[in-house]
Amino acid sequence: MANIRVREAAEYLGVSKSFLDKARCYGTSGPAFMRFGKAVVYSTEALDEGARTCTIANDNSKSGTQAA
Image 1 (tube, one colour):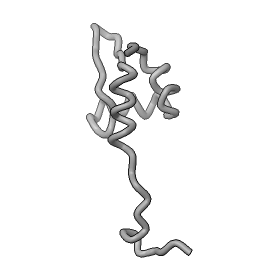
Image 2 (cartoon, helix red, strand yellow):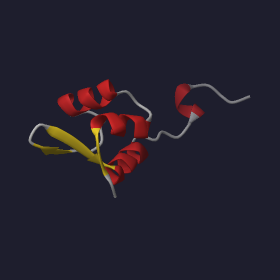
Image 3 (tube, one colour):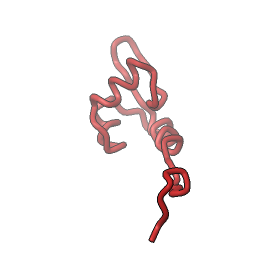
Image 4 (tube, helix red, strand yellow):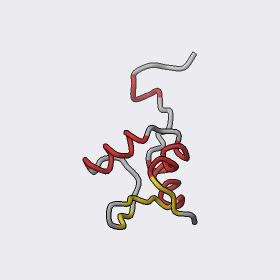
């Protein structure tokens, strides 16, 4: 388990730094983080868990469309 800063965490997840900043600020759909003074750090374990919880199965029955 490694601890990485926000910019590296964004690259790790394939999202923008702004997304992580906003998720942290508003407390929505973001991975768990640690704060040490002004420094914000994410563990790669928390990033992986956060990505797993955001995974959505493709379920066409909910959208009313059917696969061809």
